[in-house]
Every structure is written in structure tokens, then in C-alpha cells.
Length: 94
Length: 94
Image 1 (tube, chains in turn blue, brown):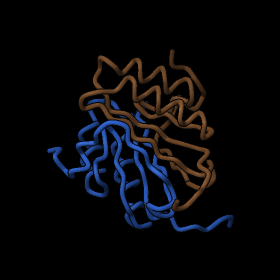
Image 2 (cartoon, chains in turn blue, brown):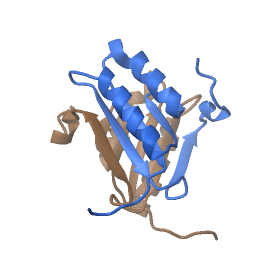
Image 3 (spheres, chains in turn brown, blue):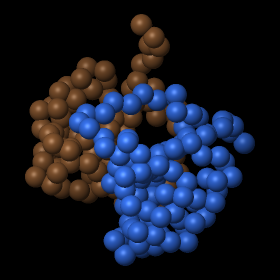
Image 4 (cartoon, rainbow over the protein chains, first blue to last red):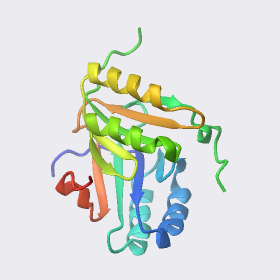
């Protein structure tokens, strides 16, 4: 069955038509923190990941696409920020 | 000195003013594949990472910011794509 890791943290980026971008944003916002532009991130369980993908698959079409990068947890990567990420003050976006 | 892993793979996302977005795009393109919108990715050495950051720091200002997620290699994460990523046919973007 191949490797069987638990992935508990994810980054999500999307490139979707502007007609559907608000819908995709709202779905991602239910599960993650908004990080930047079309990038979300956060801890997520396997069952919530399945729900997220199901919700997104109902919205996207044509050339839309969404990438989900799954990691074991938030300590298996390192992060550098250049400039100031004001979103890190949490949820100023409405 | 803390943990001393080698990070050889990175994702880069940016949120920069449109006046500078082309410059940032061009710098990222020197080091990475363009994945989507303002997302780049690829294998990178530590010395190239230092050069990348130096070049980006000379361009960005004001509220611009760039996030670099560093991973040990391209096998320490899993990836799901919903929809079709036409960029995976490589460098159709000019």
C-alpha cells in the first residue's frame, strides 16, 4: 500500500476563474488560515481534508486548479519571510 | 545552533505591489519553476537560496512580502491537484 504517513498540515494554492474565486476562498477559509493572495495554510485532519476536496471539486471547472501540499506537521519545514506579512496579525481580511 | 537540516526544495509565494511584480517574477524564474499565479517551486541549493533572498530583498518594499517554505526534498510532502495544472507541461508561460 506504499508509505502510510499521516499528513496533518497543508498549504493550499489556487488558480481559479474570477467567477469562482470567492466561492473557493470561502471554502478554504472554513478549514484554514488565509496566508496571502490565493494561499491558505493550517493544521487539518484527514477527514476534514476529504471534505475540503469534495467541496472544492464541486466548485472548480474548466481551467481552474487547486494544489494541496500536505506535510506531516508544522515542524517538518522551515519558513522565511521577506518583508512584512500583515496577515500574520490574523484575519484582517473580511 | 538549533537543528541543522539541509533544505533542498522550496515553495515561494509572493504578494507584492504590481509595480514590482514583474521583477519578483523574473528573479524567482531564475531559480525555480513557475507553478501557479504567484507560486514558484523547485530544488535549490543553500547558496542559491542565499542569492535568491538577497536579490528579492533588493526589490521588495512597503507592504510587499515573500514567503519561502523550505523542505528537505521533494519526497517529504504529498501533493494533490484538483483540476488541471497546465503549467505542469512546463514553461508555457512567457
